[in-house]
Structure formats: structure tokens, C-alpha cells
Amino acid sequence: MLQIVTGKFFKTEHHFETLHRGTFYTNYKALGDEPFVTTSIGRLFPAKGFDDLSAFNYELLEKIEGVMASGTLTSTGGIELAADFAALVSFVLNAICSPDPDLVRRLTSATAPELGGGHRPHKYLRRIFDARLMMRPGDGQRISEFFETLVALKRAAFEGVIRAIRRYVMATHRIGDKPDLAYTLLVMSIESLAQASMPATANWSEYDEGKRRTIDRALGGAPDDVKERIRAAILKNEHVAIARKFRAFTNDHIAPSFFREEAIGTVRPVCRPDLEILLIQAYNIRSGYVHRLEALPNLLLPPFDSGETLEIGGSPTLTFEGLARLARHVIFRFVERAPKAEREAFNWFSALPNLLRMPLAVQHWIGDAARYDSKTARFWLQGFLEQVSTTMLDRNRGLTDISMVLDKIETIPLSSINRKDRRPMLALYHLFTLVDPLQRARPQHGKLMGRYRADFAKPSVEELAVRLVTREALPWSPDEQEALHNAHYQHRYGKAALRLGQLLEAIFTLRLAETHRESGNDARARALIAFAVEAFPSHAALRRLEAGLGGDELAPIHAYETLLAPASSDP
View 1 (cartoon, rainbow, N blue to C red):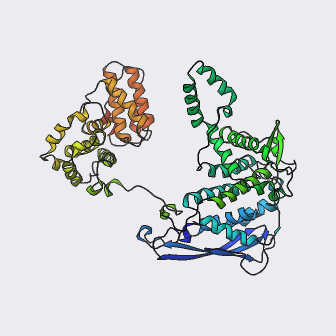
View 2: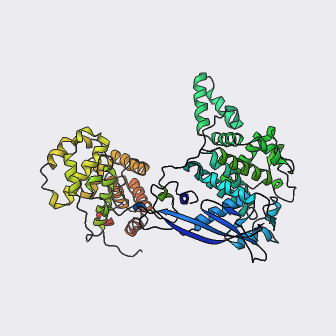
View 3: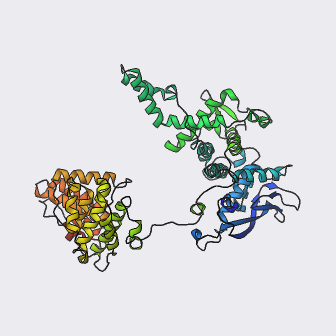
């Protein structure tokens, strides 16, 4: 929201304005009556009248473009806008700033450790959790300048930075009760920026030594070029490539000042020769927690001193103090160097908070022939199958008239469309003429289906869908039906897949079970019934069917009678 409300993505000058006022609570004490921070979207004023906390009153101006894309929306309420501004203030000042006074009190004035943590927050990091931080010259100006630089970034860079800042601030909020999570979040604040950077080339020597030796032995006497291709493929897809990118990005975003003026007053500051191993150790700690919930090494926990580095297991390791300073430096450096744009094309409406986007019900779009073509044909067929399934369960539900879509199919030069895209078009055309009596007199139906009958020579989900709805026999062998059943469930959420829906899938499974029963394979039939129950757990009749199997010879399995019977209560 911080970037959207500046108006840099708006195409017109017409916009709604809403001024949001409120209070941020903080341990930072600003003096005077003049605005402490002034930005292009609002201001912060020192507030008075709080005994145990300092505070800022804020004024933030939210702008929403008044265009048809946003309908009647004039404001998002300002909650996320204020939260991101508070996070930005926290990050720049290296202090606590929040709309929640209890959070500030908990982090800065607690007299006992958090539940699940062994130490109060100020034991992990210097300064940030002090009960009272006094204003320093130029702090307000630093916030203003950082804000203007941040919102000037190109959108992709801005989104990366705001995620990184949120993670950093969240880490400080959780450091008292979950220090292992806090350490991980600090690493991830850098990693979230690194993932969008150019990939870094990893070396085979950086791969896990045990795995490396095993693979090298397996390659044996393979030609050198084959070895290199296999090693490159492993490095490209392995964790080592991600860790390498993290280290390369961090190294690239460290300025000379990090080891000079910024290191003044620190204890055992990060030094350049140790940086590589420090980053390796930090990333390994992060991975140990994320993948295995491994606890932090005890030496990283208080009451040890507040130095930036220490030795653990013979290797230098970043403490909270060192990791936090490194993360802040890298984020500041990224903002300074990232590409800027005064204006940019971006669908800002899609990034607004508190908006719930849901697909339209089928009946609202399936009759729109203008949007129908070979690329949307599978989606249309899937929507129609959803309607058909509904009517199979409830005869009072009707089908949407899609005759205009069928008219369009008759005019499309189908011979110029590949078979994979043509099948769902023909399946929709054929199925609607079968289920809607008014469509059966279409003069072109027989000619069209006959011309492209070869499209359905091999088993396909499209023909299966038609035959499941019309209750026609399946013209494939049990092995072909099994292959189709397995392929459908394996790939049904692929981009080019056709989803049948739970009802038609269950009908297919029970029909396949009956095929096996008829051939004497009761074991496979029972297994398929069990599969149908677990694939459609909300259908009570399936559970009753399974419960009544017993150990005797299977009775005939009637898919439609079982699944389409009137609903009754569970046993």
C-alpha cells in the first residue's frame, strides 16, 4: 500500500482521498512540536501524554484511483498502510514502533522472559529493545529519504524490500519467545531479496561431501562431459544452488562502510575474510530450523556477550547482533541500488488488501460465446461438467443454454486446431446435443463428429466424460481403463488437464470396479471401492457400500444407483 497510494501506477488524475489518523507507540523519544517525519503520503508528529511509552501521531493520505476497475472502492481502511509505515519506521530507527501499545511494552519493559523463551528480548540485540531511545539529529530526515527512495523503486523490487522489512521487524517481535524462528526470519529477510536476483553458479566442491563422493563413485569411468552435465544438473536443482545465490547476493550488497564506520563500537565485528563461512553457517542454521526444527546452538543464546561473531564447532558464526546488522545493511544497500521508475504500468487493484477474489459461478460465463475459443475450450467443458454433475444429483437444477457456443464451434475452422485442443470442443458440442433435447436436431452434428472421429481413437478423458454422463459403455479394455484412471488422478491438476469433478470420478471408479468384479478380480474391485470412498469422503452412500462388502463374493456394483440415490443420514 505504501507505494500504491503515491499514485505512481494511476492512469488518470481522478482519485479518492482518505486521511487516516492514529497513533504509533514506540520506545523512541522524539522532541518538539514540529513534524518529525514528512513524506509524500503523510507525516509523523511527536505525541505527548503517555507515561510509560513514547508515541507518534500519524497522518497518512490514502489515494485510490476513481476508475471502473475499482468499482465503488474509495478506501481500504488504512490498517495495512499504517502497519507498513510503522514497520518502516521501526526498521530505519532500529527501534520498536507499532500501533499496539501492549506489544511495545512487552518487548521493552518485560521483567520476565517470554513463554517458551529463556531470555528477555534486550539480551539478544543492543539498543532496539531499550526502554527509552533518545532522538538523534537527522533521524526524521533519514526516514523521509528512505521512504521516498523505497516508493520510487520498480514494483518488483519494492515488493521484495517490503517483504524483507516485514520479516526483519517480525523477527524482532518474536526474538523473546522464539529465538530460533527469529534467527531464521533474519536470514530470510536477506534471502527473500536474493531469490529474485540472478542465479549464482555453484561449484561441485560446495556440494555435500558425502553425497559428492557417492555420486563421483557412481559416475565411475563415464566420459568427462557426461560427468559435468550430471553434476551441473544436480547443482541446479539442489539446495546448494539456493544457498550459493544467498551468499553471492549478500556479498554483492555489502558496501565498504560495513567494515569501517558502521563497525565502530561493535564487539568482534564481522570481518571480510570470514564472511563466506559466516553466511554458510547462518544459512545452515536457517535450513536446520525450517526442515528439521533444529534448535539454535546454545552459544547463540544469552547470557553470552553481545559480539557480532563467535566460534561454534570451530567455525565463525553470526550472532543475533551480527546477523541483524548485516540484514539491515543489505536491505538498505539494495534499496539504494535497485532500479527506480517515476511511473510504471502495474495492476495495482490486484495488490489491494482485504479483497477476496473468487471464481464466478458457471452460469454467469459459460453461455458467453465471445470468450470461447480453442484455448478456453477445456475450461468451458470443465464448467459444463460441473453443471451436469449438479443436475445429476438434483433434477430441479437446470443447465445453462450454451447454444450460442455450439453455433460458434460450427463456424470455427477445426481442421486448423491441434487435436489436443479440438477434443474438448467436440466433446462439449456432442455432450450438449445429447443432454439438451432442443439441440438434437443440429444438422451439422453427425457430419462434424464423423469427420473428427479419429480424435477419439485412443482413450481420452474427454470421451470418458461424455460416456460417464450418458451412461454409455466404455469401449476400452480393463487395462486401458486402469491406465486412464491412473493418468487422470496423477495429472488432473495440471495446466492442460480436464477435471471431471468428484461425482463423475467416483462413477468412473465404481464402473471400473465392476469391470474387475465381472472378470473375477474381486481384490482389485474392493481396492477401487476403498479408493472411491477416500477420493469422495463426503458421500455417505460410498461409505455404506464399503461397510457392507463383508468377506463374501462381491455383488454387482451399481455406480449410478449408489451415487445418485437420494441423500440419507450417515450410518
